[in-house]
Amino acid sequence: MIDLEKLSLLVQDRENKLRFTLIKKGLNYHVYIEKLHSLNQWLSIFVKEFSKYNSKSILKGDIDGDSIMIINYLSLCNGIVDSHIGLNKILNDMQDDKYELNTNIFINSRKNNAEHDKFFGYKEYNDFQYFKHVRAVFGQHPSNLEYRQNGESKRAFSSWPFHDSILQKNGCDLYTNIYLDLSRHGGGIRFNLFLDEIELFIVHVLESIKNMINSITIIVNAYILHNCPGVIPDFDKLTIPAKIQILQSEIGQRYSFDDYHYLLDATITLARIHSHNPVVGYEAYNDNITHDIDVSLNEIHSIVSTCDTKELFFFDEFYSNIMDSIGHHYYREKCAMYIIGDIRYMDIFLMVNKEISKILNTDASHGFGDFYYRLYLLSQIKTKVYK
Image (cartoon, rainbow, N blue to C red; front, side):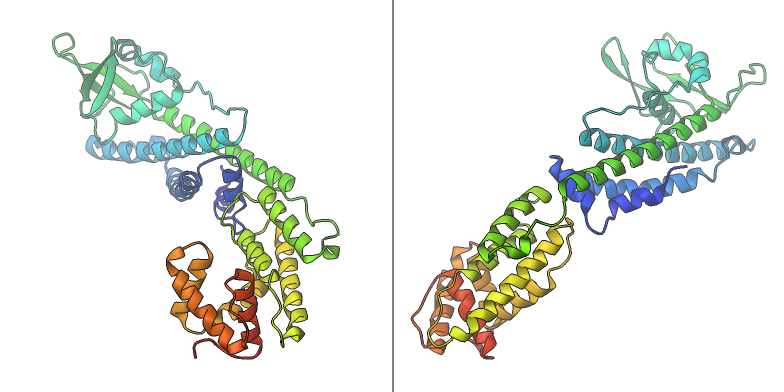
């Protein structure tokens, strides 16, 4: 049986390693991560329910009841097949060698449905396609079948299922008649159902799902290992500008997010803070801010060295203390929005800068580095721009 826990760990990896692997491989994150979550949830249900069935115990002699049970059973099997198709798509997009499950299970089905398969052009169907048709014939909408005949699409419908005739012992469990051309086949074309072949087919599909989950796990772990080489050599010996530069380079290589990644954003902010001009009378605070910047960079490096996505506790508190020095939440938010590129709030940004200059008794400056540094000074002297 497949290891559902392993699939769950892939999908719900706390460090989101599968997520960035899929993006780095050029896949569409929004489609695939949602698909993986869906597959994880549905496959767990389908496999759990499927394991409760013994296909031979479904038939109790009540044809109406049996038919409902068959519909439920084939629906569960279909869910497992769809899960296989989804995982197969993801796996094949993650690797160059395409994986495909080839089975030859429906031997009795093809033998006893030869007239049907020939008439409707199903002789070349693989087992996945054949199962899908079986499910449609004995499914919830047997009056909505679609066939291709001589290149044309035609509608057909199947009758309510029947037990196999006593006079025709071919081993099938149920049969139905499929009607398409009443003038030529007024009695319909018989289609036989062999539950043991359906069950065996799903067993093969489950084994294939197990193998695909293992393959995805191997690809993900190998990719992470290859792209997360560990600590940056002699990082602690580098200057602050050098640390910022090499971190930004490594973030681009080790993570999939080239833009707007929270680690990259943090290094950009720290670079701006570091680029300030000293304010006369507050020289004693220069070493303090340099220390806090360096500690923040070391914190980022500790995360980048393992490709984790942990929170930046020190940097977040450091940055929050700076921005909180504005005081009023509205002005703080609008200044932050201007800094990240929303020019609508330039007037508010200039107004806050002007108030800061008055408090520190220095000339006004509109540079981001000076803005951050002056807010840092206010935080050190326990003063806010807006009380």
